Length: 344
Image (cartoon, rainbow, N blue to C red):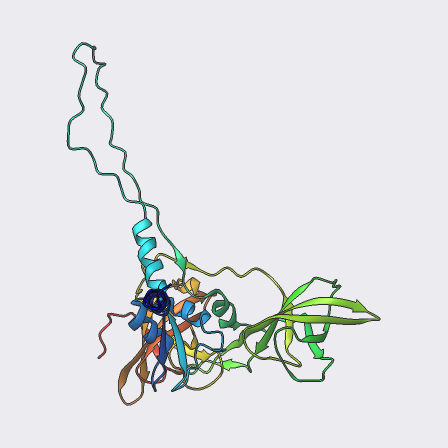
């Protein structure tokens, strides 16, 4: 075979491989984190939908906590999510166009007497999606009147005090248990006092992981940590496992005329930034619903708007919310109110 022909084949193969590689790399964009970046902002910029931030988080398994990303860190942005969103939108059912041509009638056939009927209206299906990532929702926690407990992590074979997924632990439970039983590993704060009234409102309860009993032998109960949402520690409490359903939404969020106070944070740090969790002093019986959005204000010599929160879970008179935006730190003692309410 002539040398020129071989060279031509090699060139064609090279161009094909280059084009394939180029097409594939266009599906993943690499983003170098700069100071002030958040997954919410990055996703909004590159995927045009900030609510896809959880999928970006899943595409970057090295990011243990979505609240914390660091300058110069490289994040993979799955641009193919744009194609998926577009395909789903195009695949959505569309009402059939009504024919503009009147129906033809057979001249010879007698026509039955017309019966008046109301036109049948087609109702488009309401599309819903999770309000928040399921794991993030489970870990977000809630305010409880008292600390629940049916068991405790006693120790581990390795003697380590900070534990993670797949670690083996020794536990004690105060009721009959069997192999296969599962528990939530929880953390509880100190007593929380209302920052304005000083009244005790309970405890912040957060879920750190899930543990499952793998062996009961010689009076010793051994379990395995099957899932972690944050560090699990020796001494953490156990509560019975139950299914936790992530709230669903159509994306049409309320801005109710409800005012209240931020009373605590999930990590018990004084200041919270975007995608952190806060707890408020209004709940389901006060008219709050999952998905509700409020403005937050720092109150001092002046009342200054400093962020936006969205409720993700509510109990009787308290609720859990995520900080969706913050211009300055959101903290206990800040107030929240309806989005459009003017500030005096």
